[in-house]
Amino acid sequence: MSGPVPYLHFAGDAREALTFYRDVFGGELQLHTYADFSRDDGPAEAIAHGELAGAVTLCAADAAPGETTLALSGVEFSLLGTAPADELSRWFESLSAGGSVIDPLQRRPWGDHDGVVRDRFGVRWLIGYQG
Image (tube, rainbow, N blue to C red; front, side, top):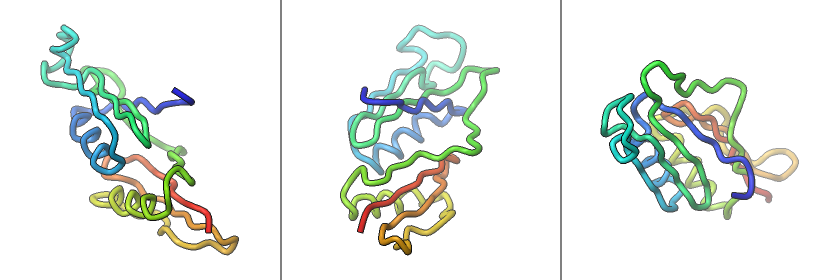
């Protein structure tokens, strides 16, 4: 790994979220259930560990009963310049499906493009590119 990798704890929808992110960003998705890890502190089919590896890397799991779940405030994930402009535009549109556009992806006075979207899982993404 080259830097911090987000590890998100969901309230039972980690499989859905990670599959969604794989569909948006591409990459290889690995999912391991509580049963795979011989865990008995949650449903056998819950995700104990999932990892998306590719242009965007992130990990996620279903929180066990009583554990804190994803609630983001004051943070967004920046994908500025991480892919070609057309791909970043596609990511922005895909992430907004079922979510909300906070600031449209648009050309800024300094010449670059950026925008902010909150996806349907509550994660904020800053997406942009130069020129």
